[in-house]
Image (cartoon, rainbow, N blue to C red; front, top):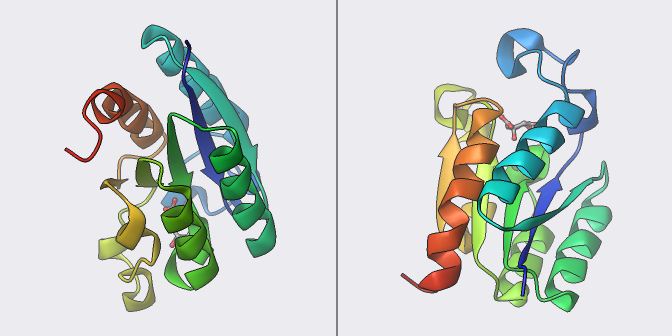
Length: 150
Ligand code: DQA
């Protein structure tokens, strides 16, 4: 059966392409969705791609991934990465493989971005590679599904 990877995006990522291009590049969220679909197809995976600007919306999306028995969650929680215990708790409750992605290298930026609640639930973290990080995360999914907990 085809596994579905839920790719979840947090606040302000709908503005990609025009938002601080010197930090986030010119790639739009629609471009990233297309990249995810093409990468997933190569691995025989399906993708559910979502974006929300609200913390509760992100929690609801994680609950939906859990209810759908997703193959894995790839999440760029954006600013909620650094603040949200609710997002962390939802990820822990999902008991799904989680990969955290950021376009920018959060460790080269302001100190408040160096802390990630999401990382507490993540199998791995990819940051600093721009949109390509989403494809890298999808490339990592088959091994996570085949050897959970590895
Ligand atoms: C981000 C990094 C976060 O610190 C920031 O709040 C974002 C985007 C990234 O993809 O680099 O909105 O998650």
